[in-house]
Length: 102
Image 1 (tube, rainbow, N blue to C red):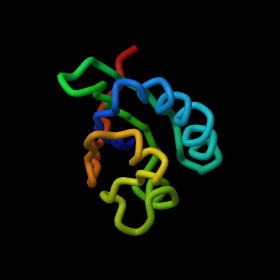
Image 2 (cartoon, rainbow, N blue to C red):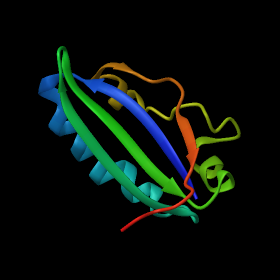
Image 3 (cartoon, rainbow, N blue to C red):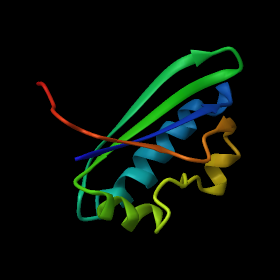
């Protein structure tokens, strides 16, 4: 399994709208991709807004490429999300999940 991690800082007044975008647009689209397993939204206050860490879990890099394209490290940030952000990662970080404890 692969963890895909992306970070951005939203304008404080747009933080809730960003969460709604993920819940109503991004995550439903991801759920249609074979190999997508889960997604998490992590947030914390930041000096200039609200920082988010979005973690998605996938079966393989091939599954991720179905979402992100051939260059899987390139962040997928739609224009409506870009408008909500003060800053965001242009590249994502992938980690192999060695083990999950529950």
